[in-house]
Length: 176
Length: 140
Image (cartoon, rainbow over all chains, first blue to last red; front, side, top):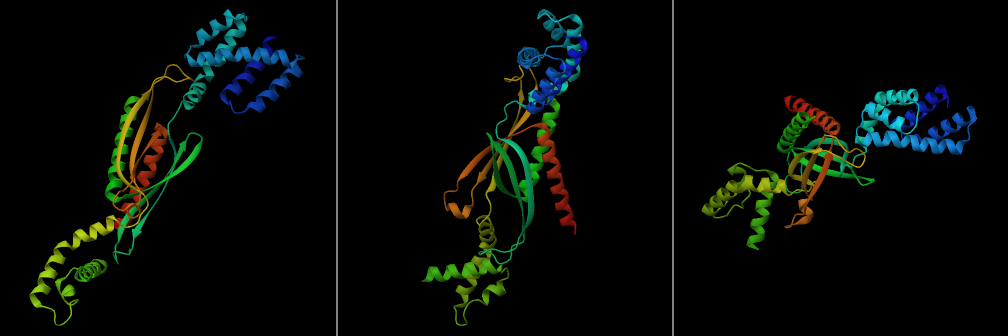
């Protein structure tokens, strides 16, 4: 592969890595590349597969771009191409790291919260009430399904909830 | 019959929210024994706020929050990244199902929810807006 072709291929690879959901687009771009450069798609796919192993392993082990470059040279790639790839890696690694962290297991993740509050006007026991209530709807991801949880809070409970959440935020910030 | 009548009387007083002795006294029939009337009124007045609070606590509602705990964890490793230091929050809400439905054995379930820092920030924004809306309503 000439260096121009290599940089075009690298670009396609990184675009896929940063947007792993765009599988179709990646495959289309790969076959376009193959046709343009008169390479057959089959062997190209195999090469791409082995190339992709390097950034994935690097991400897992938080390798620096130096180490990525060394890995590629060990695999037999020319110095120039290895450096180019390592440069691209350095540029993209924040995005890639963020993506990997985002994939980490989360238990019962809170997705969304809605609320309303109002006044209880009367009930079957008390003709005139006039107490304020707050209703929260929490959307939680359980496995692959979303579940809605409805909770009612009194005002004092709301204020202490708010206070506790602010303490959590301080705690999280001190660890970042 | 006596118990049932007393029950009806107290329920009526609580329902109407009567708080003054005169209002309660005029509920009794004309020829009711005077001292008994006063004694009953006194006892009712003493208990009325406790009864109102209990009625409010047991009225129908959505499931209610009874307790809440939290802890902050630091995620150090996962199958996609071997080393990291990502703080995350685990929030446990103890929720009691509708008291009216459960009678004397309220069902309390614990729900544990995980929040990332971004989710927590968004949630705090929402809670802050609720607080502002509440103060706006209170100051009107």
